[in-house]
Length: 385
View 1 (cartoon, rainbow, N blue to C red):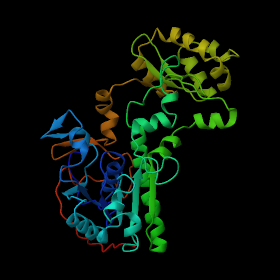
View 2 (tube, rainbow, N blue to C red; view 1 turned 45 degrees about the vertical axis):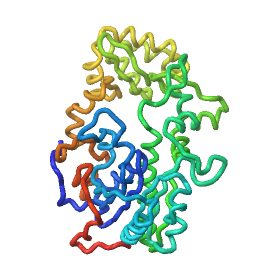
View 3 (cartoon, rainbow, N blue to C red; view 1 turned 60 degrees about the horizontal axis):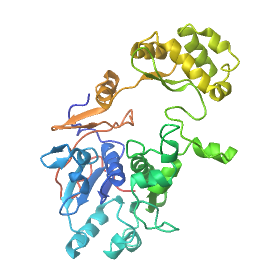
View 4 (cartoon, one colour; view 1 turned 90 degrees about the vertical axis):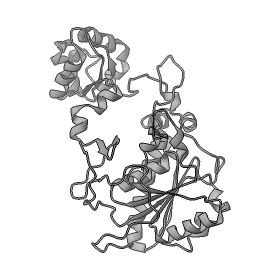
């Protein structure tokens, strides 16, 4: 477990200065990831702070856990961007920055005189990452977007939930989070291109696009068959057994992706006849006959306790896992081994999932660290391309 700051690690993005003007989730997640990998991130919040400071309980010193989960490795200052002095200060920070991340409603920053089109001529080096709901134009352009609403519009709710149940929101803000990841990808692509051209550009990351991008394999299935995908509960629409299966103890999730894995499974539970049955001998046939196969597996699994069964199956090459709650997952020995829990100055959070061999992520600033300007450039002399 990572238990302390690692200020000596330069990080892959050392020397990159990020002005994070965003709030809520997608933009702040982007800024946090850039900061984890060494960028100097200065976050500007309105005088009352980011809205997510109030998104609790739980709270610590009046600030919600939601905010703490998205704003480490940043230093913050408070500016009123609707006021002339706040706008002037942001211009000064833009002159120093390599990257701007913002997720205001389209037109808001333009109204203040500090929008992309107004600033790009003064600061042609800037990589400007705009996170929006629907983009700036088109039938829904400039409208505000929210994770749950995009889950509904992008078809995600329609394929999530039990087969005989109602459409269901995914139990985490998956669209916001994937948009934040796409924003990071876009920023890195633009920085790489700037190393050749010397020019910044606009990175457009829209929740709507990110929501649609999550539709695999349902979109691929529809493109090929024309059949509208339906909810399948925990089961995969294309392969089986890829589902939660009851056992004599805790349920487990099976993720059998090929015929070899299915034969290993059947051999382990003493049901070789299932592997030889023509209804289950191939992946396609297992998917077609899943309604028959599932109860046969659950009948065989009734003699086993779920957790040791999952461990034994994984050991022989059959993908399987116990169904853990959040506490169990965060306390799992492998979670700690992978440094996926971070402790820093009384703060606890999820670790960086991308591991770099020479320039790993580092954790330098706990949320709520104050800062009025960017830090000096590192001693290695790296400068903006």
